[in-house]
Image (cartoon, rainbow, N blue to C red; front, side, top):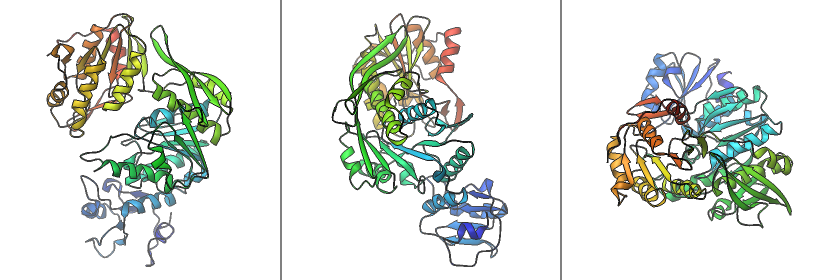
Length: 494
């Protein structure tokens, strides 16, 4: 793409003739055919790194202030380089969201599960659909990791373009509050936006300064993007705030307890078949009822399933009956994922990593009347310290026994994190401490007997564990595969 075509909307100055092949905020990718956008980040300020990009051959720059570069550098100054990067990414990749039917999902919990269920319903009914979110990038035969729930604008727009080129007709994207704060999704044309719920999370160091700030960022998806449909969780009180100023032409509601909602679920019943856990319910829409079975646990996942059916039926005009049938075959990696154990117990892998999500999954698992409910969990390092004691309080009240271990400790000593969790337990016989998570899982397996449920909470879909600055391979389903074939019994430490 010619520099003139890419930059003409940002400046009236004469733009040198040059082919731009790379749009980047990473100096390592900058070369003589690159446009480097200076972004102020939490750890690095791209303005201070512009000279490196110049040394690598780059001569075109976008920045929020003048740069001390030689005269042959062409610098466009803008008010907000993050917003500009999103705009440039759309132009550079040919506005790919106009070639797809894009669904954007936001909320504190449920984004990943709802997005996967939407994709599963569409694919199951013959509509090729891509996914972008916490579990990575998925479309066709492509599987790629993502650093963030919602990638940076360049990755986001390139991925949408690749999806369209690969024959996808739709794409479902998890839209995080940080993404909305940093304008990563700006320029995307959404056909539908969806709200799952809102609760106190992501407030603290390196996240949102206040809950109001967090809520305000979520709200942007419904006011700043002109979607045709907005779909709301009628059960969450925050939907009223989210609806304020919403611009969607058609607005619908889903619920698990309000029969007046456009799509609602009743008669929710836990289902246990041997070592596999699921849930059955009846979906009501326009007076008709449809029996549904979902291979996940908890009313929260019924809510996610009803939301997904609402998207498939309303936005894509798929028959509700066919969606209800397809639902029974859908699973989500690392979300209340059942794993049968040789002992006759069931392991459940789930991403629950805060007070509310852990309480929800443990409460749901109690409904299956396990002989004993064992909970293995930790907490992320270097942030969210306030949630640690809360996690301990929930586990001590709802689990029969807890194995306290590491999550992603980062540069914080895992023993310190575990001690903070343990401070919430009144009975020292109700838990043990094993910092090495693999050893902790191995030990927990030795505790299980027939009809027990072992919850592995916090890691879910993740394929790594962050220890120090190193991301080490770590996938709990694969670890369960290994350990059930060759049991390892470490010593627990109280």
